[in-house]
Image 1 (cartoon, rainbow, N blue to C red):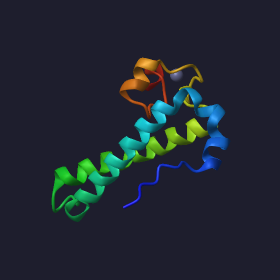
Image 2: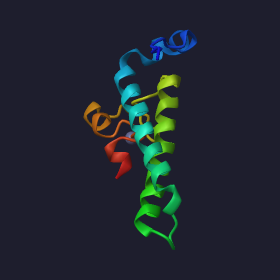
Image 3: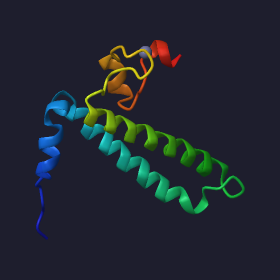
Length: 110
Ligand SMILES: [Zn+2]
């Protein structure tokens, strides 16, 4: 089977400038997104409060993370990744390394 390693050229042209510093985070977010989506797919058959409460609550949490990851990927494309959505200050790199989809800085989150 042939392996395709090409990246859509439009993607590079459109977001190269904005994502140059965040390409690592982008990859991390996409990886995390795939993991959450496969977890959701795996739990889906029994993810209901009356069937399996743990599977259900895990799925709910995963769905919230998926929303946050997609928002973070959108912020990377928009060039606003790493900026707190509340105070517009810079989110510390250490925080983003732990939670790359964090939308707010620590003071705003707490
Ligand atoms: Zn903030």
